[in-house]
Length: 209
Image (cartoon, rainbow, N blue to C red; front, side, top):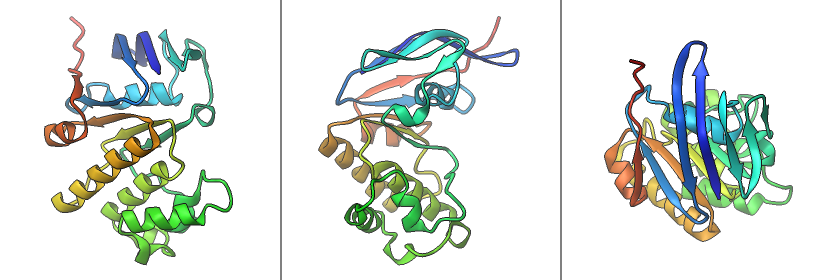
């Protein structure tokens, strides 16, 4: 379970998230819907331990992982994260990027993800040699491969055509269902939101009066 208790986050003098609370139960898929600039990405980064809250606390499985001045490192949170940008390792091939985070001897899992994401023919290429849409699929495969307890996806299907987007949405849902994990899916696309989950929360842009 993820618990966010009364969290506030500033960037310099800009208040991005104010007194935000949320509970995500185990084996749950949640969609966070809202326009650009409303704080969706910041929320995911706070959960992942990539940002420190200015106020409030975050708990995962009952343990404190974030509070003002302190965060538990991301690699100790059993979290998979897909950023808005693909953020691939440029010196690694597609297959090596997907293998990153897996224990040795998991070549079968890498092959499975290459197949499911339609990337098998690109396995030995480097990020500079593939398209933006292909890079998005690599990033998604890398996050899904370790079957993390919590999967955080930030606009993961940008630059994908409609048919491929539907295939990836199905893959995401199947992976979460098979692993029994939890999903927080950030998007501004209502169609994606409705496909992923019945539980949707909407964040609006904060305006300081």
